[in-house]
Length: 569
Image (cartoon, rainbow, N blue to C red; front, side):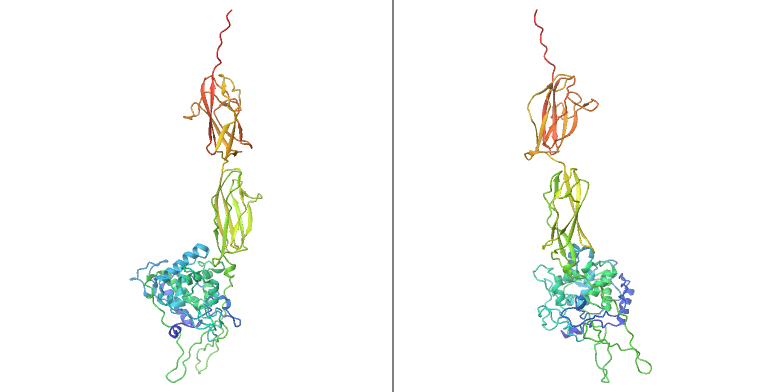
């Protein structure tokens, strides 16, 4: 453990020479690093406040120590984001142990599914994992991704570090007096209690499992509606992990390095960081203690004496006051931050014109931790020209999510016009989440149509059929109102081409019509207009077909009256 601690640098103890080396490394490699944002240009961020049972300002690591080794001056020569750089052509430093790399990529995919607006890159997780634990001590993990022994930082006892009293009874860090950073991503127990994840499906949230820790780090970095493709949001995210500008510069340099290209190496064969960037305090040959920059405190309890440059007369010049760096904006607790909006089991949205949809649109809201989010307003909006509305005649309604995170829209009432429309669910204000559902209205249907009487329909050439034709359409045994019906006069129902002679309807100008579009009334009844015979005797057929496929064929006969012989004188 002591050797491990010696390989780590106390938070904030990195000198300005290291910052210059980081910039030089990026410049020499031409790595595509995004610029640091304004307010992140110099000096460690100072924490204020008194003794705490948890991390102040919500730093994930409690501002614990970290490795400060920088990437090689020459980065992998592969533009763009890649993890397929052949091992033979890549620097040893570019290699990431297989299980560790898989965990970072899995975390990226998982977060993309629940919080796509965050745009979390796995290379950022790799950069933080490198700085925090040397990629889980070079990838020393078992088949499930768990380290054989816990990776623990030093006790945060105020002796050069933050003072954080125990928050977990030693459950994670084995220390019942003070907290320690734990695992490959170095979460302190109180932060893990909030952000811990079970990413490998073993039923445990284990900070010493690289899969669990990587997903927890990803969700933590995305908190508060951050978009990590934006430089300012990325800087705030990294600073929320460890509130030191030098930490940010170190992570940034590794992030740019991994973006240029990486390759997979076997677990346990990753390159470990070597030594801190500042010397360990020791003694000179003359027996006096060599001057060493003291670590800057990330929490009250430490001091930061900075020796000034020597004057010719042997004195020292006053130490200039560092310009304070504004702290990152506080982020809402993850339990209060909307993470995702998902379908809660809504089935196909289809109804007949004028009917009520059997399915109701249902969504489930989850917070940034993936847990159901209650008491969240969700707005549902109908868009389209079918005339469909929610119960009560509204196009837009707002529903509050229940304890299980679900919000159910009111029932939909189909309009009279058939066609497609959409229902959109929207929640959240800072970064709204939306879900869009496709829906459709079909025309009213009938599965049966019959005549209401059975009289034979006969007319003499050039005469009107004396009996009116009335039919009734039904759907599942009930009267089918408003159903479209097509009436066509043909010579033969087996060859239903429209006829150009025989019986016909008449238009407003009295011209023959042999095809009509009609609609059933409120009782499902259909009364045909008058039918007329022309001068062509014979047997004809009237075919009526409903929306829904029901059909009836009615026979029409045109025949001359029989001549009778005059009586004999």
